[in-house]
View (cartoon, each protein chain N blue to C red):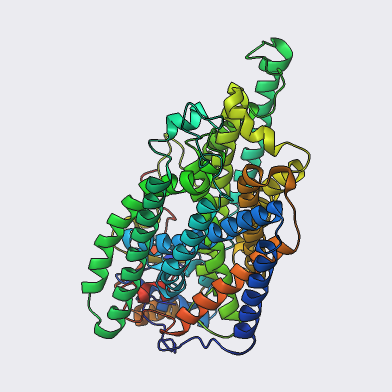
Length: 178
Length: 411
């Protein structure tokens, strides 16, 4: 039994990579992941990637922002130190809207960025983990889990048939510096 | 699905056939509208005549705005070099092609309203600028260098005339592109669009100051122009959406799919929020500073006969699209989009109603045969003119440089 963990098909052309996905799927070989230097339309649907749940996080952070912004205003303007500004009621609703709105947007945006970084392990000080360095440059990479799919010769031939310029057998999952 | 591996069988010479029920109903609507307006104008009752004029102004302005929004849409697509819209751009183009007629109708309404003193009598009355007259109004007199009948009419003609000329040229260039191909038409349209957008951006606020805001000439708000622009843009997008969905349901335009609808949905959603933003900015500043000469506008709209409609407008134009369109899937469903677009068109009718009625008929406002009839008549006229125009050319500009990209649009 080889120590190969992942088989990577490296393509120079996105259409050929898409063709490779078709071939692997037609042979019931599960694809671990796919790395491309640019977004490719329709690839999520093809790979069966579920739609991102980022909007849910955005909504939660937004709702939190609304609550915090409104509470801050209520506490400072109406509860702790009410002031008479132009004869307006301390707890006037229209003047609460802009600040509440802005805090909502702020927390929503920052929360989304934080969620995205957290989910993708992109926080500062963390070395990015990459399966193939050229996927960030000019190559389109198809990764197949070698332990799950044991017929390595078939995978190799399918990838090459589809137009892979290189097929790699990696013993380690990530090639980047860690 | 590779970017080039898909071969479609689209018929780019497909034409919309405007006949049968659609044509008949639109003509019936126009006839009903004319009848309602005639009843109003011939009633002999001063208040009813004024109410009819106010309704004519409302619908004439609405009609012109929607067609102007079509022109703006077309120009915006050229300037941003948008690809997604290439497959459906014939629809705003058809709306734009109707702009000259819509402008002419609005001009007639405004002109007749001025001469018969049924509209704009707040600043256009005998002796209003004459200090010795009992009619003298010092505020109006101070504004008379700008707000006088000849200059007012000149502005109306120049603004709407300019928009109309551009609208016609855009359509002509696009039809020429169908025949000749190449990039000449596109490049020319790009340049003209850039010029048009600058002119349009600077003049539409002034146009709305004149046409609507001057009904209550003591009051002014610099936000008013953008507020009107937002209303115009949202209702224009809604019209485009309705026509797209109706055509798709009738089996036309199979190259327009849920991705294009999604983009229209985002525009509808986003600009409804923008409308609210501008509306609220105008409201809040006036509420906060609490200066009588400014609050008078909202005071009138908070009288019992307008207050429920004032709030209903916010619910339809802000809360409804916010809740109904926030979900991604909702923007991709034809029926949801159709429903929201119709709702928004009704909502902006109400929006214009609240802008116009308190400054014209005030407490004599109504909702009856004149309102419904006038709205129906203009709706019929819009459908008749736009759909006739649409049926005269292929439904897609087949030589548009970004058409292929539009077909593969995916979001």
